[in-house]
Length: 291
Figure 1: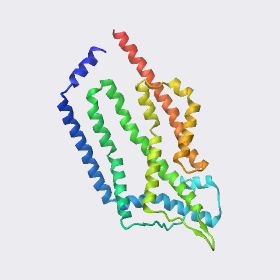
Figure 2: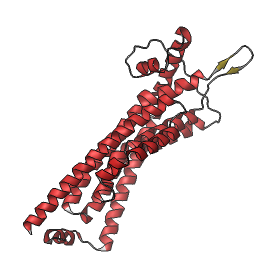
Figure 3: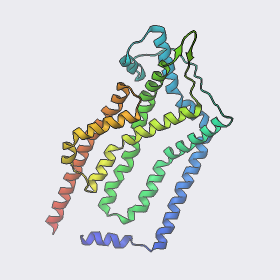
Figure 4: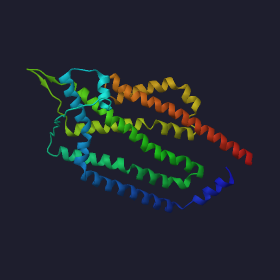
């Protein structure tokens, strides 16, 4: 440990009561931001829920097109979902509420989920400000990019769910309906079940897209290196396929829609780890030259 590192640690020392007081302040800020975010989301909960229904509406339009013009295949559906093929028409959605206060509690759950999403930058920043005094300067500088990369990657995963996966999953569900003269099986999802589906998929994809952040942090801690990750590609592919099979509907197309970007992020992670290792070697060479 160099003299500069020791001076940084000594400058950041504080009595235990000061640490507890700072922790209390950080927790108050986090809880306060969550309360404000919850109230704001609950005020707009109806509009937010209607926005979350747009993938369902898109699926209904595609299903109506399929019934009118016949089945066109999954790739034609994918082109329509991603905007590469124009889609016309509209769909009248029907969801049900089977309990007197079901939609009210659904809006409460939606407000809590929305508050957590919009307040994540505040919570992450407060966490960083609390642990930063115990880190070296170079560790603080290395940690900051991850605070930006994590929400960006989560939003990328959420966008994939909202614009591609949800319409496809809901179209697949609508296609399972039966309209027979003697038997009818119509899809009438509960408002709470639909929200559970949306939040489950958003969290699953958003967390899967954190793979570069997790592996880069593991590399900073010395737990993995680029050579190990490169040699373990076959096991990584197997793990990615298993995760995709668990968090997506049981059809090959939706599993590929998650497997391909996650594997791409795995390759990006290998390059990130290599850059971290090269930077660490340069810093070690510089320190040796100074000594």
